[in-house]
Image 1 (tube, rainbow, N blue to C red):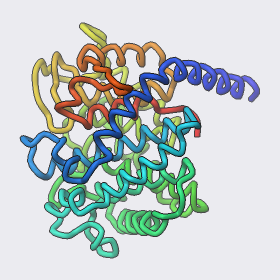
Image 2 (image 1 turned 135 degrees about the vertical axis):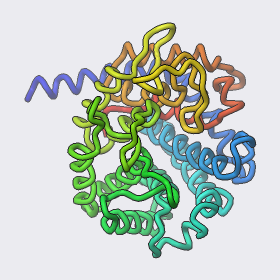
Image 3 (image 1 turned 30 degrees about the vertical axis):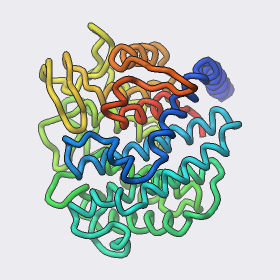
Image 4 (image 1 turned 135 degrees about the horizontal axis):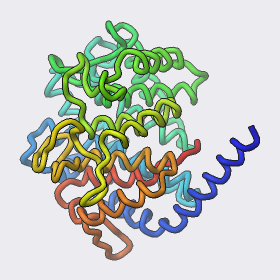
Length: 363
């Protein structure tokens, strides 16, 4: 028992030391992100590539909001002197995420405004889960009760619909497969809400995780499947994101999945990163979720894997992934702001990378 506690303390000291060394760069990147994200809803949407269409522009904008809030929540914990500023910016980002402009992507597919349908029966799980997760971070670092009513309504709606569904899962969009990473955001949001509100949805979270552990594993790798019903396709981007979200709700399961992710998807040459497919080559490709796939490596998968690598203090892998990010992204710094050159094309990638590199192994 004492050795386990000692190990945890040593890990936390090690992480504190690493983050102190990175503080300037992390703050500079947060400065850049907030300057781009904390704007009008329409201007944020215009930061998303026009060629991906209105639905994906909306998705990417919401994801940019979500991951920026995750990064700001982490920064408030790492550097408490930044807490008040993080609370301020997260609140402004939540307001943007709740705007009609950001809700439109979900409305386009469901034919119903997600906030108008909060007491109905349609899924809206993508929009609800990310908004609830953002609010949970706001509350976690000391935000006030201004979003308590919508937070309660979102989590109540998600829990009710998950419990009424045939297999505890809901579709992101009508007529499409279940995307496991999208469901995991909902489970994380319910778990965070439960920690903050007398374990209200803990039973649902435990039921979902137990089914994930026993029923939704790929038969060849033992990893969480990417889709339900199960397809003969395991995506590195989805698997890495699954590992990240699992760190919030089941650390042992997350650790098992991360070790499997490294076993099947990690590639070390010519640079370190994570492949999009473990069982087939892809020298050059493009995927709306994975981003560019170059020499087998998944842009999103490599970025998302930085989260569990950081969480589990996998120092060598983390350093390698940050080197790869620098090679691929090329950092620009000026007037107290830093960002990868690629953020000019995909701002969401900048938000994801900052959220992942600041993931911390303690509450």
